[in-house]
Length: 408
Image (cartoon, rainbow, N blue to C red; front, side, top):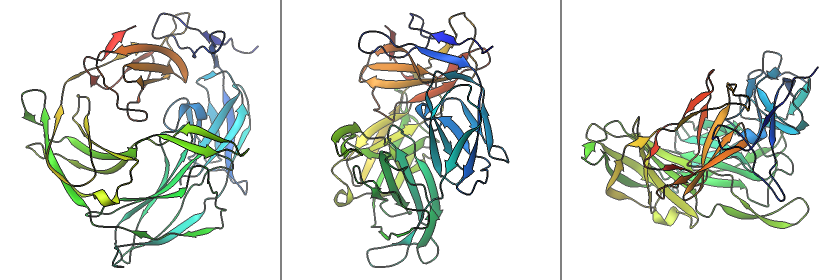
């Protein structure tokens, strides 16, 4: 006799998961206490050890997950959503594949992972001098994801590099970028698969791609704590770059032009640690002439136990920037099913919905909204927080700016 499903419906308690109502009524999500098993293998039928298997809705780091054994086999036994579902397998070398239309309780799900193409080239200055030790990273983003699948390497003494990287699946919307970073140089990002012009290279293809890096500028400043100007010693200082609009026009497989949101979250350009006086310095910041019109640059500072402070900065070098880190509050809670039983291992996501609203997901199902008393809005892909419920169903998020939450 199959296990009874847990029907998780809309309610007033913030710990009760639900899905958003559509059209004529609410659509209720059902979590099944069931298992799902299968195998991840390459095109030759060889099992792939260490591959991570998750549900596509959950993203790369959330939701029920499993890791394949020495034979490539995996099993998922957490409370699973009602199907059909899509399974994503990511190998240890950055390749991935998607198996669509599986259900809780399915066995022997087979996920085939194709070989990755090779990309090679040279990183040099505009004068033709090779740059040794530059980091070259190939990042592919599937539509709807904020995290990338990344393969990286370092250039040799002549500035040469070679790597095998992931490509998009046939007909899949997304983006593929080659990011290059070297100390003292402005970072580079080349678009290898533009929206509406996606290409999937065959495993035996070799893509030749050279990169030129120009000298960057300097950005420096100080991190201070609270309102008494204490130095933010040891603060983690990060410069992000992201697309400004976040919206693109693409042509789908039927030749229809449509608009969709970018899957890209902020890209980390460079980071450093503030000294004992809270001062920091970043070299190699892109010059004004190197920046694209749709790029935005965000400077952030983080100190343990405090929300991250951030500000938008124009491209180019700047001196004496001040980042003030203020106290925050912690959001905690408990995940229960309708009978009051604690749900262990549930992923709870706190996401910014608008400038004054946040919404909470539990294992991919909508849970509720809270109003924001201020205009805290890091933006899509930047304000997402995740927590995993413990054996008693309890969870806790890192500090967020205060005051923010006002029960609605």
